[in-house]
Image (cartoon, rainbow, N blue to C red; front, top):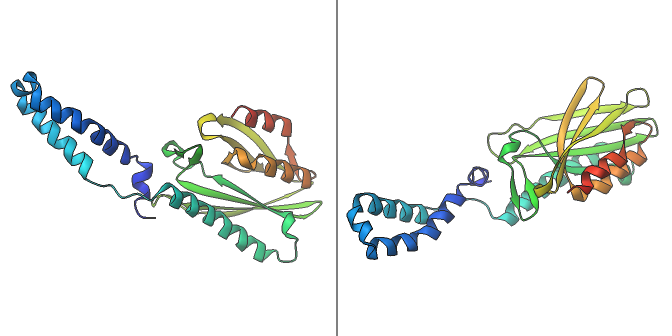
Length: 221
């Protein structure tokens, strides 16, 4: 997506600052006596501010970013549905999460948290004693990787889901998932709270999780 790295590196913010400061700085240079005394400082500063306001750093619109993320999750869900055509759709649940990779670059669109890589989690409830979890990372930033993995859980080898922390401004919680010696984390938005509950209820024999504790984390958002 063209300019998406500019979005995560917040290159639009200095431009906004320059646009806000340009007119006051211009008036200061025209009418303030001190500006004439230190013209070698304030005139280059004015020019720099003008350049910052004029130069455009291309970045996709908020709607384009949200639509691209939604499309990435949906495409992977469709791929998994085709693999399990013999299983009813309601037994295949998609969680639209985000990877923890480069999480410090997170930005919010309104109350919607956007991280550098989508993490699609598709839970396939094969039967009462078997659960598959397919995970795919779809990079939004150009520098992120896009691995795809699969986990298998059963009555003997359960999937453990543990809440780690709440990110209030992003309306997101960080969940840890582990099966045997394998583990990973994902940022899960508050709107998927009831999907998590549905997964735990449908595959309770293959999952170890305290839904009340997970709810407590969501309640803090």
